[in-house]
Image (tube, rainbow over all chains, first blue to last red; front, side, top):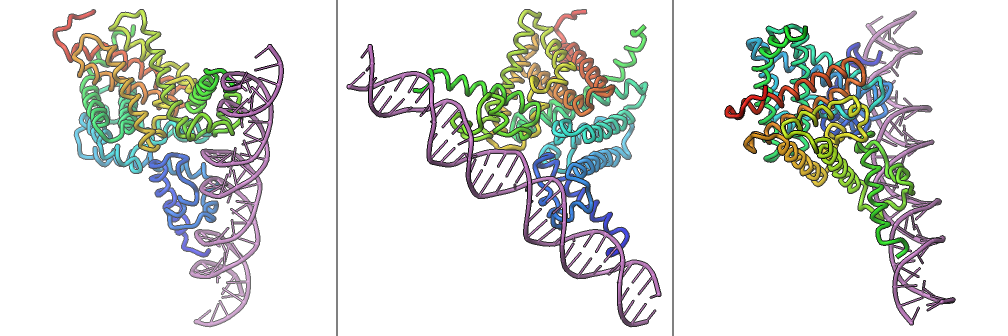
Length: 206
Length: 206
DNA sequence: TGTACATCAGTGAACGCGCGTTCACTGATGTAC
DNA sequence: TGTACATCAGTGAACGCGCGTTCACTGATGTAC
């Protein structure tokens, strides 16, 4: 072999890493193979030694981005009391820093709509990671039956993603800041409220 | 003039109408000028008699789509009690019908991310319509100071758009239906809860 | 140990294709007389 | 009234361009002997 055993894997990973940033910034169709390879310090011809197609890279880059998001969540909640974790994640998520740096942020508001329109294979890869993320959020909701925790996780993630989407549409001015602020208040309030509501609901279902 | 006075305007409107459907279905970059003109029963060469550029059509088509959404909201809430309007809108919004027909649905989950990345001009046009939509939703939240109503409108719209985005990522299976259901419960609950929190003097409805 | 060969990640030109846009032209109709 | 001309929405070929993908080639390094 020409290069050391790990060399190819390292290059592959570098392409994925750089692509995951640029794709979130510019959209799933917003940047070409040649430019993505240039980001990784390579020329475009070598692309197909690493990926079957552009779409295959999009899938990998997107999965990588979702994993990174979840890793960040784990890190920031590492030494935080269980009942405060969800609120902390929401607060981090709904920051101007996140809004203004889509390249290093959550893929859902950045790429969700586009990837939902791709081939079933791509969409399913996205859906799988989405479910992982929901499960992870549910883990951060203590003192609740699993089903209720999962519901709250879905509602919170939807509110977070929707708020970020609206904030980015609004730009970076007054309306955008207002949207982020409301999203934060609403998420924090939801985190406080939901446990009681879910507990009271249970006897009602009979 | 070759055609009757209204002919050109009618053609223009037809292009915008058809484009607004296809763009929501396929994304802001998912369909070309030639195909959009074919949708309207024309050939691509005539496009520039109606629009300065493709982007100009995207702006018009998107604004049209937002206006249509607001018109639908007005229609379905027309003879409904004021305090039930927001819940009715959310219920309609978070339906499988809406999820499975993005072409005739809300532009925010369909085009939001892409348009937020376009030129400032395009993004601002979107932001203006977003604000209109927020204001309209705030009008449907009675018995509240305006500022609180606006906050609730933003939170509800964000939750609605985020839920639809997640549901479309999830496809049309179990996870997707779960997402829609949770979104609906959460929106209805929010509509019930918020007024009490904001205004303690409001009498209970049971 | 040194030498010859095999490997294959990466290069860069080239491919076909579809895109947004331009442009000379058409021909049905409005207008002038 | 009828006739000649002007208008301009719409046509379709053509443009330059960038895209994803292919391919013959390169050359540094691993391996065989």
